Image (tube, rainbow over all chains, first blue to last red; front, side):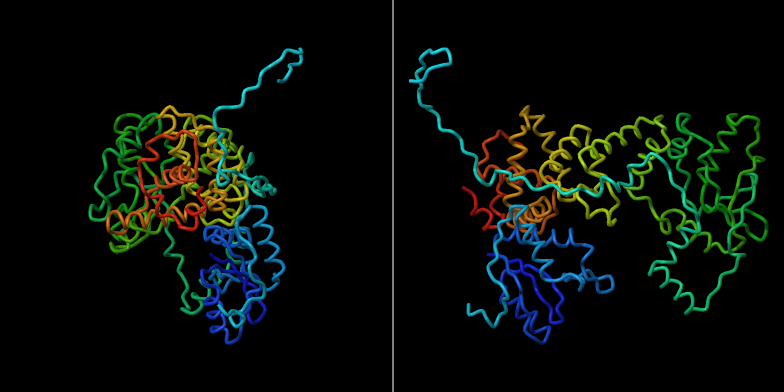
Length: 114
Length: 396
């Protein structure tokens, strides 16, 4: 199973990404941030669909992306919150008939015993 | 026993053939259509020209971060520039122009003859010659030798009304006063590519479209044909835009102008109509034109109809396996990369033919029954094995 996740930075900024192993990915975010980082929503499904939705976020929300100088990040401007991004992803999955489903909410690696 | 409307008895025999049930992965499900902003902001949809003042442009420039950074650099170097270094313009007899053979290229006779063809030659398009003017008063050409040579030779052939001696004919020359030949060499490089901002394929197409749409000039059949191709795409809500432009995020936009221009009207119609019907939420992916050009030509050659059913099933396949063409492209490229490595033992170069062939292989694997040209299935014959396992597991 492949994953598309939403991530909430330590300062509250909302971002997104894709991963095979969400536990490892969550540990990486946490170790870089110096604190536990939460994935508010994790969607699971086939790899190509997770990747497609990630690209759609980057394209359709191009005007919402946070830039560090000229560097296009995978985080949104702070004026866009978790609900905004989750609603966008949910609507996109529904309207485009994607094979992705929510498999975790408010995930972090300390809660994962796998 | 059933009865007809006229009361005649009919015996109903059960069907003896199995009814083909379309595999789920080939069924396209409609996607809600959003209003496309490009319909209203398409830059090519103009019937009137627009001019702005130079002051507008200056203000645009001064508002950008990149310009501000450049001006800061000037401040840091405390440099000013001298107006004497700005080139001047003079009317100079063609006979006074010298050509330094170490700076300019040899005369290209074919190129010169091409410029001078009577059907195309228009003296209004001749451009000013670029020279350096040495302290001994001699003009050394740094750019425009073909223009000068063509004009002089045409005059010599008696083709310019009222002028017989080309040597005395005065032509505008833009020059810098210098004896520095290194400057002349750099100038030649700048004027012939190194320092020139080349026109993009989109800018050239836009110019052509504007000649027809804004200027109403239909004297050139090639320009008219190019405008028609754009009009066909636009009728299907597909729009050429500049590469890396902010417009390229919008549905229906495409930037691969060269491939678009290599397609005929029927191919453009089929490809853009298909995009507009099934993938109207997305920008046009580069693979669309490659695939449809390939499909149109291969189906026609094999005398197999490229049916509406097949077109819809291909859309369903892409939607079910990849969501959109962009992800299909990433997956087929990855499959091709592994396939090439396994087959030939080294990293290969991507081949655009693999888009169409890869899709047809997937179509067969997922139970498609429509007839396909064998040429699309023979190429990259075992490519299918290298798609993601989680995708292939979805096959019936």
